[in-house]
Image 1 (tube, rainbow, N blue to C red):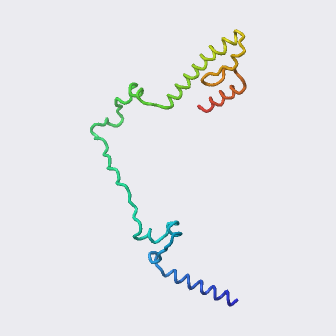
Image 2: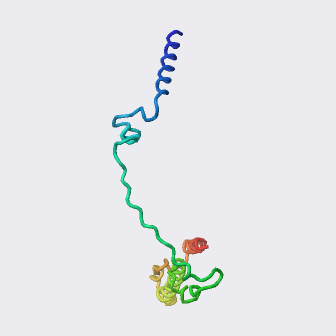
Image 3: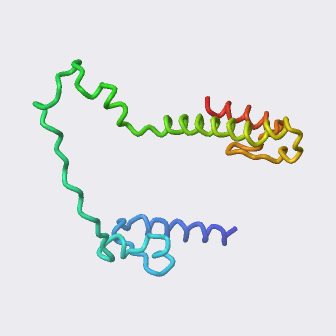
Length: 149
């Protein structure tokens, strides 16, 4: 009992002694404190952090050259919209082109040989997959059409 009382008093005294120090008074030194980022060299005069120069400020365009609010300028014309490089439009266009190529390829390499009785036509594979219809190709088409929405 006496021993635990002595330990408690020593702990309280140590806490009071540490509480009297200002944050700048205690300097932690050692590699473990450097690794944790709390070493005294980082707080005061140790290594200096060098930052790159800031980019200069960019001034807005002159307000006298802008059209008044609410008035449409020449940027709304169809010739300006044709210049825009829209990846979504490209994706739709390329998908439509691939579907046309698939239909043409399957017509030439699957349907016509199959009509002539050529059994090797079952292995014909176009740009979008095999020409022979199966449950797997139907599921693939169904999944790809739900992804586009």
